[in-house]
Image (cartoon, rainbow, N blue to C red; front, side):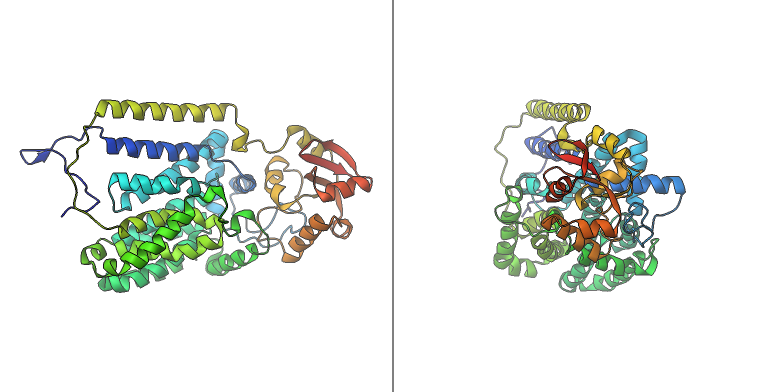
Length: 478
């Protein structure tokens, strides 16, 4: 009986396999990863990208970790549990070496490596793996951007691979790195809990080693500039996010076309668990190969994905190998396809060249999709002449921190330094247009706002002067 992981055997001569030509399966693999690489290389920068770069810039110069707010006038000097400090330094170092091109390519490499790990741990034939990943790749790339989150995707995949292989010795070192790169390490901690549950059935003898590794990983989270409060700060930060109404933290919608692969994959996982779960439970060979661990880890992330769009890509990375592990294994059939290695290689070469050309053109323009120039240069020059404390929304704060460094922002994507009362007051001002009390409290004398915002209209009606205005942005002064 041959499982799906080894669907066919290569030709053998004198007991040794022939070199494998560029087969149809290899062509599928190449086309799949060219597609993933292309989507990753064209991932757009977001407002978070730019405040991360500014933080890295300031730490690079000061040779000190930023643990207090220095970017805003509303929360200046307040504590900032900066659990992404190492990512910020890495991103700025990449920017200093090669600009946003190198930053984006490095982020793309992290994504491609993450999915390559998923490919290697998925227990299925190349064609089954191709179909499963192709089904979800559109939904998986929705939140990709050059920011610390991509490091979490890579480390999450590495954690799953280590847990499946029961190589627990490497986990604490990985968690030390992860805890200093991104708060997504909280997902890794949740996976450790799920892995312990799986190990009690799958490999009880390995459970003591896994528990020891879990304790070491918990301690590893404290090997950060935040110290023993790291896990507490992560939990508090997640709690604050609920009050901000950030789109990527909203629950996924059934009608969202970007999630076309998420709901079918979630449904397939749950259906297969009901239909095939008992068989997997009693399959000694599957337990030995870590298939039960794959399924339990995917189920552990399912509620997080249903709760927030941001967690859909990590879940899909685990759902692919879990669904493959639950699919019934069948005896391999003799391959009837006539291989055309030269044609396959030619098609692969054309695909690689086309993708490389598309990326080169996008970087040369650069395409607006990349978000490298999110704010008009004229608006920033007019803002430089504006005096007084600045007012801006949450969404634009990260851009202004980088592109207008001489101004302290009102608010930005770093929700941790800001009191909930300030965020609530800013939301009220935006929804009601009643800005006066907020502006008086923080002595606002300049505003960088969307041209169609209610606050913008109220300010102009009150006599504020547009120093700059186009269809998208306005710079106003009293």
